[in-house]
Length: 57
Image 1 (cartoon, rainbow, N blue to C red):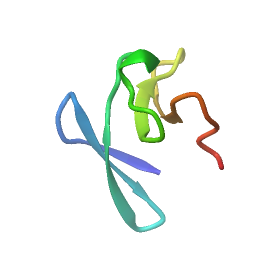
Image 2: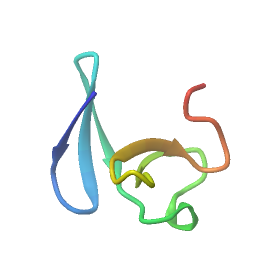
Image 3: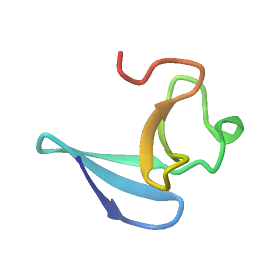
């Protein structure tokens, strides 16, 4: 996975040749239900997340 900076609110995430524009949310409360988003992990990297669900599924 490669993350290219588009702006501080949106990032383009490239996974296996496909590109996805994902919103960056500083916390889970600002994320929309059922929408993939990016959040900063405790280690300082960006991670793909899904509010109240498992993003791996």
